[in-house]
Image 1 (tube, one colour):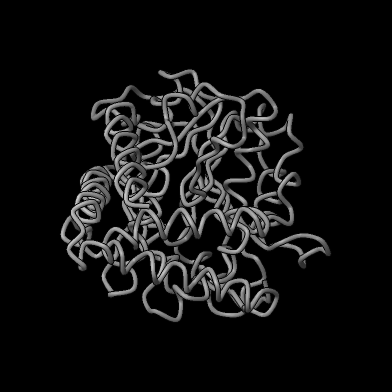
Image 2 (cartoon, one colour):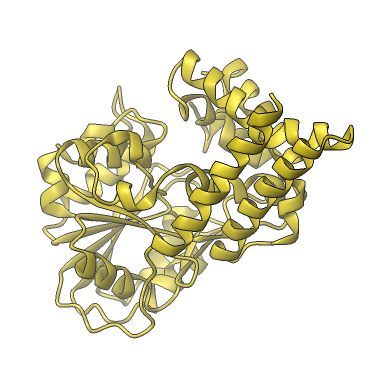
Length: 358
């Protein structure tokens, strides 16, 4: 056991260091892109977000052939009115009133499917309502795709974490793939086991998307972003994640209740079935919790393992411009994550998100 307390965190640290070298980053100076681009924005009850979102979209530069398709997914608040008034006068914007949700579909894929049908652009960009893009975000991402000959790209936004729950949990999103997935291999592989994506900000060639059946391929997937990339990889298309912290930011949650329910709707499917979840729990305990417990008892192996895992978190935090000081609380982050995982299984099929049961 003591060997595992050192070896597993050490391997995660080594992979994190290698990924820091291979992680793609957008250039600061990019050429004007001639590509036709459609930005699809699914919206459901996003009255608190749409004004700032549309402001950031209006500021996009470097892509002359750019259109924004905002799909209102039957919002019950003022989203539609705000979207219409804020985008009025800018011919790049189109507002679609979404159809009633069809049986067998989840809301976001259904909204994206409707938006995708409304455009013939060469590249589709999906953006969540809680994302804020820098003026060069889309042009820099297109340039990065072109330079690497990618079919899809997931520029990972900086995760804004302010409340205690956000600071404990949100940094784990990036750390999870920085520490466990060899990015160099993932960028060239067709194995869906290496799939990494963040649907907050995502780009894909329309031709590639069409060949996998469009967003219908993920019509009932809770983890729509990961599943979309898995379909693309199975179809022989290549791409990967990029460090988008310099061009995009996202604040997903503003309270413990939001974070708890947000993870509750999806965390139980993140690791596959029962066996996958048991393996994930074992991995998280051995790498993230037990070294800290053993260190408290005076174990040198535990202390070294704890140092390795915290160092890997420090590297991930540095890469994504998140709080470096929060890395030392990694064991507590893992304990909270395990609680959220257990709750996700316990409350499956009963959690409400945006007014719908998931």
